[in-house]
Amino acid sequence: MKIKIKRFDKNLPLPAYKSPGAVCLDLYARETVKIAPGQVGFIPLNVAVEIPKGTWLMIAPRGSTHKLGIMMVDSIAIGDEDFCGDNDEYSFPAFNFTDKEVVIEKGTRIAQMMVMKYERVELEEEEHLENKNRGGFGSTGKK
Image (cartoon, rainbow, N blue to C red):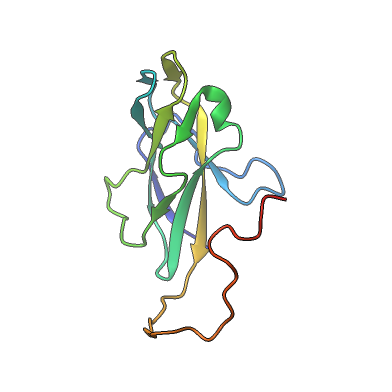
Protein backbone atom coordinates (compact mmCIF):
# COMPACT_ATOMS: atom_id res chain seq x y z
CA MET A 1 0.00 0.00 0.00
CA LYS A 2 1.32 3.44 -0.89
CA ILE A 3 0.36 6.57 1.04
CA LYS A 4 1.12 10.22 0.39
CA ILE A 5 2.87 12.02 3.23
CA LYS A 6 3.94 15.60 3.85
CA ARG A 7 6.70 16.55 6.28
CA PHE A 8 6.46 20.04 7.75
CA ASP A 9 10.17 20.08 8.71
CA LYS A 10 12.28 18.32 6.11
CA ASN A 11 15.27 18.31 8.47
CA LEU A 12 13.57 15.48 10.35
CA PRO A 13 13.50 12.01 8.77
CA LEU A 14 10.48 10.46 7.13
CA PRO A 15 8.63 8.05 9.43
CA ALA A 16 10.33 4.67 9.21
CA TYR A 17 10.11 1.06 10.31
CA LYS A 18 13.04 0.72 12.73
CA SER A 19 13.47 -3.07 12.57
CA PRO A 20 12.68 -5.81 10.03
CA GLY A 21 9.77 -7.02 12.20
CA ALA A 22 8.33 -3.58 13.08
CA VAL A 23 4.63 -3.18 12.23
CA CYS A 24 4.48 0.58 12.82
CA LEU A 25 6.40 3.58 11.48
CA ASP A 26 8.07 5.76 14.11
CA LEU A 27 7.09 9.44 14.25
CA TYR A 28 9.22 12.35 15.47
CA ALA A 29 8.50 15.45 17.55
CA ARG A 30 8.65 18.43 15.16
CA GLU A 31 9.54 20.92 17.87
CA THR A 32 10.72 20.98 21.47
CA VAL A 33 7.72 20.95 23.81
CA LYS A 34 7.74 21.65 27.56
CA ILE A 35 4.93 20.12 29.62
CA ALA A 36 4.30 21.19 33.20
CA PRO A 37 3.57 18.54 35.88
CA GLY A 38 0.02 17.21 35.67
CA GLN A 39 -0.63 19.07 32.41
CA VAL A 40 -1.26 18.12 28.78
CA GLY A 41 0.96 19.31 25.96
CA PHE A 42 0.52 18.79 22.24
CA ILE A 43 3.56 17.51 20.39
CA PRO A 44 3.38 18.07 16.62
CA LEU A 45 4.40 14.90 14.74
CA ASN A 46 5.63 16.54 11.53
CA VAL A 47 3.30 14.69 9.15
CA ALA A 48 0.09 15.16 7.23
CA VAL A 49 -0.99 11.94 5.53
CA GLU A 50 -3.27 11.07 2.65
CA ILE A 51 -4.36 7.45 3.04
CA PRO A 52 -6.35 5.40 0.52
CA LYS A 53 -10.12 5.06 0.75
CA GLY A 54 -11.06 2.09 2.92
CA THR A 55 -8.16 2.60 5.32
CA TRP A 56 -7.64 4.27 8.68
CA LEU A 57 -4.55 5.41 10.51
CA MET A 58 -3.67 4.63 14.11
CA ILE A 59 -1.18 6.62 16.13
CA ALA A 60 -0.02 5.07 19.39
CA PRO A 61 2.77 5.79 21.86
CA ARG A 62 6.02 3.91 21.38
CA GLY A 63 6.69 1.23 23.98
CA SER A 64 9.32 3.46 25.61
CA THR A 65 7.35 6.72 25.63
CA HIS A 66 6.39 6.32 29.30
CA LYS A 67 10.10 6.47 30.22
CA LEU A 68 9.99 10.15 29.20
CA GLY A 69 7.43 10.90 31.94
CA ILE A 70 4.48 11.20 29.59
CA MET A 71 1.62 9.10 28.35
CA MET A 72 -0.76 9.65 25.45
CA VAL A 73 -4.00 11.19 26.69
CA ASP A 74 -6.21 9.21 24.30
CA SER A 75 -4.23 5.91 24.48
CA ILE A 76 -4.41 5.85 20.67
CA ALA A 77 -5.48 8.31 18.01
CA ILE A 78 -7.62 7.41 15.03
CA GLY A 79 -6.97 9.11 11.72
CA ASP A 80 -9.93 8.99 9.35
CA GLU A 81 -9.36 8.81 5.61
CA ASP A 82 -10.74 12.33 5.23
CA PHE A 83 -8.26 13.91 7.70
CA CYS A 84 -5.87 14.51 4.85
CA GLY A 85 -5.54 18.23 4.16
CA ASP A 86 -2.29 19.99 3.46
CA ASN A 87 -2.16 21.40 7.02
CA ASP A 88 -3.78 18.44 8.85
CA GLU A 89 -0.68 17.70 10.91
CA TYR A 90 -1.00 14.87 13.40
CA SER A 91 -0.05 15.59 16.99
CA PHE A 92 0.53 13.63 20.16
CA PRO A 93 -1.48 14.82 23.18
CA ALA A 94 0.90 14.05 26.04
CA PHE A 95 0.05 13.99 29.76
CA ASN A 96 2.96 14.68 32.10
CA PHE A 97 2.40 12.25 34.98
CA THR A 98 5.50 13.38 36.91
CA ASP A 99 6.01 16.12 39.48
CA LYS A 100 8.60 17.90 37.29
CA GLU A 101 8.48 19.66 33.95
CA VAL A 102 9.05 17.26 31.06
CA VAL A 103 10.88 18.48 27.97
CA ILE A 104 10.42 16.54 24.75
CA GLU A 105 13.21 17.55 22.40
CA LYS A 106 12.71 18.12 18.70
CA GLY A 107 13.51 14.90 16.83
CA THR A 108 12.51 12.55 19.65
CA ARG A 109 10.76 9.42 18.38
CA ILE A 110 7.58 9.75 20.40
CA ALA A 111 4.85 7.85 18.60
CA GLN A 112 4.19 5.19 16.00
CA MET A 113 1.79 5.01 13.09
CA MET A 114 0.02 2.13 11.36
CA VAL A 115 -2.36 2.23 8.39
CA MET A 116 -5.00 -0.51 8.24
CA LYS A 117 -7.90 -1.48 6.02
CA TYR A 118 -11.44 -1.42 7.31
CA GLU A 119 -14.90 -2.34 6.20
CA ARG A 120 -17.84 -0.13 7.17
CA VAL A 121 -20.58 -1.98 8.98
CA GLU A 122 -24.32 -1.80 8.63
CA LEU A 123 -26.12 -1.88 11.98
CA GLU A 124 -29.13 -4.12 12.54
CA GLU A 125 -30.75 -3.20 15.83
CA GLU A 126 -32.25 -6.08 17.83
CA GLU A 127 -34.14 -6.17 21.13
CA HIS A 128 -32.25 -9.32 22.25
CA LEU A 129 -29.13 -11.10 21.09
CA GLU A 130 -29.16 -14.88 20.79
CA ASN A 131 -25.76 -15.63 22.32
CA LYS A 132 -25.13 -16.72 25.92
CA ASN A 133 -24.09 -13.93 28.35
CA ARG A 134 -20.45 -14.17 29.37
CA GLY A 135 -20.73 -12.26 32.64
CA GLY A 136 -20.05 -8.61 31.80
CA PHE A 137 -17.12 -6.52 30.71
CA GLY A 138 -13.87 -7.84 32.22
CA SER A 139 -15.51 -11.10 33.25
CA THR A 140 -12.64 -13.45 32.40
CA GLY A 141 -10.74 -12.48 35.55
CA LYS A 142 -7.27 -11.16 36.32
CA LYS A 143 -5.18 -14.28 35.67
